[in-house]
Image (cartoon, rainbow, N blue to C red; front, side, top):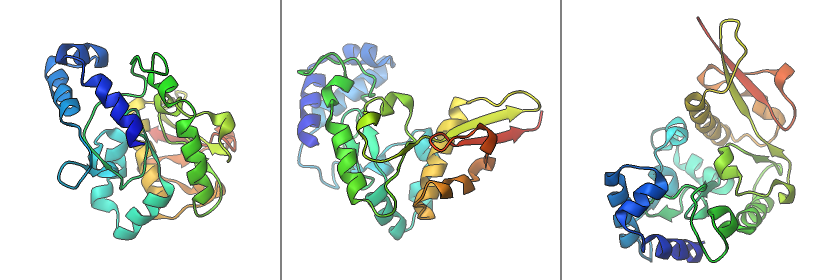
Length: 235
């Protein structure tokens, strides 16, 4: 989807560092850094100016995956077939697709030829790409949604040609009702992603065996589309 990416980069490259900082709600230093990234972005991508996507991101989800240290060559090959990364700048990335560094959240308000934000810019494109990849994917036709709400908002669920399963991770202390704790939930989504890849999980039923980070499947809180995993903490 690099033609679309180039269109977004051309818009961002016209913005001054302070505009970028205000738009992204980041420090002036990060505004300068991302200004430079948009100025330097160029094609073609090579191993000199770009990195594989799965090794380039460094948020909590990717820390949970720990692909660099825990994936074998066969794991990377399998991930390339089955894992997709949603991106504000690149739309949909496979794990080994090369990408140049950037910051452009999917929820960013950016005026484009399509409208006022990236959701309208990407439109049907991301959903169409996912359907093509689901059709070609080995194993059962299921989409396991481990993205944040911000990013999955770029997908049109009613048009996905497969059941969608969206795991939920809850933490409980003592007798209190379990709840989502963002930091832990992000990391757990990465841990589950890696677990699915390394164990070649290929069915909805097999997901209930996930026990990473001490989470366990809670059948009473779960539905087929929303399996819930709970972790209990000592008070």
